[in-house]
Amino acid sequence: MSITNLATRDQQVIWHPYTQMKTAALPIPIVRGEGALLYAEDGKTYVDAVASWWVNLHGHAHPYIARKVAEQLQTLEHVIFAGFTHPAAVTFAERLIQILPQGQSRIFYSDNGSTAVEVALKMAIQYWQNEGIARRKIIAFRNSYHGDTFGAMAVSARSAFTAPFWSYLFEVCFIDVPIPGQEGETLKQLEAFAAAGDVAAFIYEPLVLGTAGMVMYTPEVLDCLLETCQQHDILTIADEVMTGFGRTGRTFASDYLQHQPDMVTLSKGLTGGTMALGATSCNEKIYEAFLSDDKRKTLFHGHSYTGNPVACAAGLASLDLLLQEQTKQQIDRIGQRHAAFSQKFRALPKVLEVRQQGTILAVEFEAEGTSYFNKLGDTLYSFALAQGVILRPLGNIIYVIPPYCITDPQLDQVYLTLQGMQELIIGERYFEPPSQTTLHD
Ligand SMILES: *Cc1c(COP(=O)(O)O)cnc(C)c1O
Image (cartoon, rainbow, N blue to C red; front, side, top):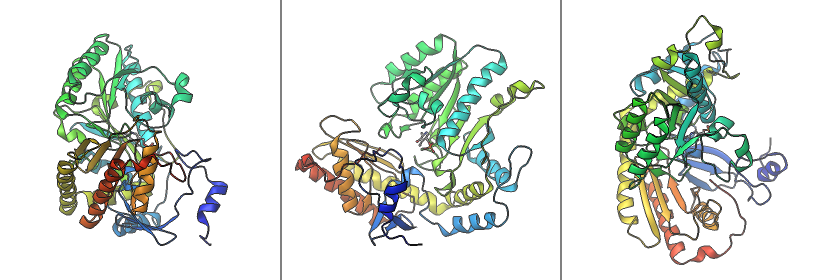
């Protein structure tokens, strides 16, 4: 099979995600990956500074994960997960429960982050119905992102991305993200909704709102919000799809908190970026509300590939690597290097803000209009690619979420690229229209 002209062949048959296919540049064919590097068909290499959409933890084509997946494939590739079970799903659930925030005791598998959110929302809504109590409302952060399926879209920002579907989305009580200076206002908003007594659940991205532009807030204010929810019997759902598995410096962002959630959603790093897998965990309180002789109290949800053995094997292998001392050191090293870079970078002209939490770094540049659709993002995206670095700007915000195995020289290359962007912006050369325009998130 020839890979020649792969990009052209792609253009004949593929519809890419988040892509305006009329104006998008040809996709870059990637033929191999190793560590933090991706190898293109034309021989160019790219540092994967966005961990291939925030999923990759230990590097591409990791030999240990590959071996474990291959072994599983030769043993059992899939089995129906209602009425049947298998070692990989059970062992992975046992090990997840050991490391998840205190109190999480059940794992419900699905296929991705959006479905993990759908399951959590269904658990929360049906929990109150099973209890025979009228609580229907969901509280969420105004700028949040919880996925692209309908329930997940409903609890996400009302943005240009979801505009065609607004009238189909259920109503949600939105509160402002409690960024520094905004904490008191957010608490007031939450208390006002909570006082009505009809709120079923609060769903939140703990400490870092990813798609909103790596917007960050403190564990202290989140603890206050969670305490208010607990006082009002509002169920809490920590969406750790992006923040889980070491991203924020600890295993979960919830590990920075005193108050623990009723449910946690997981995906992205769940398999180290190897297989599509989602998981929703919950505590015994939620689980027990579904136990009944009345079959109508069952959680009637499932997917064909629920608990897929190969995906669970990838998850187990990734967890082995995550818990190694060496990986903890890599995570700490990235955090320290990000912090040192932030210190210098935030003082530069046209740099509005630099935010950092663990391995996540975000740089916000001063720009005309701050929307996703502004031209700056396109220019910076092309600039980074020319430097051999994959960075997908969210408008005027550039973030770095590297695989933990990224080397120091590779990190230097990423920082140099950010510096080059800043120089480009000072020179105001970004007003030149890029040769081909693309949209990125
Ligand atoms: C990416 C993301 C999702 C959606 O996950 P998909 O696997 O892309 O469906 C949900 N929540 C958060 C916080 C995310 O970052």
